[in-house]
Every structure is written in structure tokens, then in C-alpha cells.
Length: 192
Image 1 (cartoon, rainbow, N blue to C red):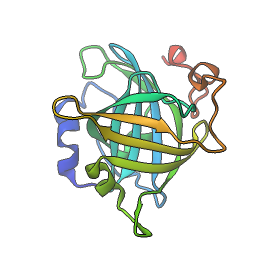
Image 2: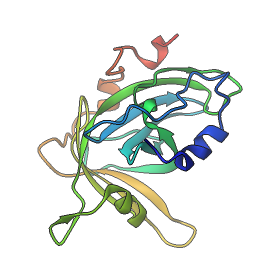
Image 3: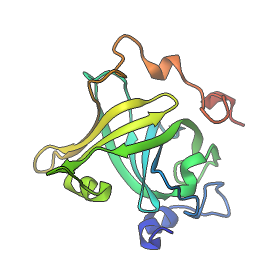
Image 4: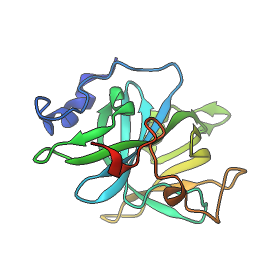
């Protein structure tokens, strides 16, 4: 079960009598999972979330993830979400935080590749250190990815990068080629 303090910010921003978003973090799994949710809120973006210690550590990716290692994607940290959010699709009603349509664009499991002296570094520690190396086994996203905290002073930011491996694709845009939900098969425009 997640440390409830990790979900305080998430819960403070939402009125659960008005939004269909999940409140709990009960669907914890044996293998760590990830989800990428396409979210048509005030601006269309993608939310990249990693299951870590009973919550979903989250970043908003304005341009969405890429399969091209030459593409660096801005990743803006957001509040931790409950693990039950991993399969959330639906419409967050107007007047609520994050109002708009959400689909599960991709989901799957991930492996932690963070090591020091041949020992795995805990994923939460890696996030706190500002460098996360993971291997995604999703329906759409596969292979090595890195989340890197970079910059100096007031110009600090995160980047999501695809690593050069056999799963890198440089000649197609997966966001255009595969716009549908991996759970329902619907696009963002088909959710009602």
C-alpha cells in the first residue's frame, strides 16, 4: 500500500464526488508497470507514469514520447498519482483539475537499469538523483529510455529520451501512426 502522504497533493486538487478519477492505490503489481496516458486537457499532452513504491511517479510530456533517439522530449514533473490510475480512461468534467479526456495510449512493465558498481540503484533513489534508466515492455513503447534531470539554477528541467537500441525507430511518428488506446482501441475523440 502506498504511503498516503505521497498522494496528498493529488487528492487536494480533486473533488472525488465530481471526478471519476481513482482515489486509491490498491492495484499494486509484482512487476513494476508504466503507463502513458494521452490527455486532452487545456492543451493536449501525454502523461508518463512509473509505478514506484505504491504510487505512480508522473511527468507531463507536452510533445509525447518518441521512438527516435535524436528526439529529446521535455518532461514536466507532476504530483504522484494512485496506482489505480494506471488503467483510467474517461472524461474529467469541466471545472475540475485536469478537465478533459484521458485514454491509456500505452502501458506495460518496465525494468530498472540503474546500476552502480554492478548493484541496482532503487528507482526512487534514481528519480531523486535525477537520472532514471529503464527498459519498457509496452504495447507501443519498447526498449531503453532515460529520464534525465538537467540544467542549472532556475533553468532545471527533465528530459525523456529514447536510447539507441533495436527498438529505436527514426522514420515514423508513433504518435500519429498509433493514436488509439491500448485498452479500449478508441481514440481521444471517441471517448464519451
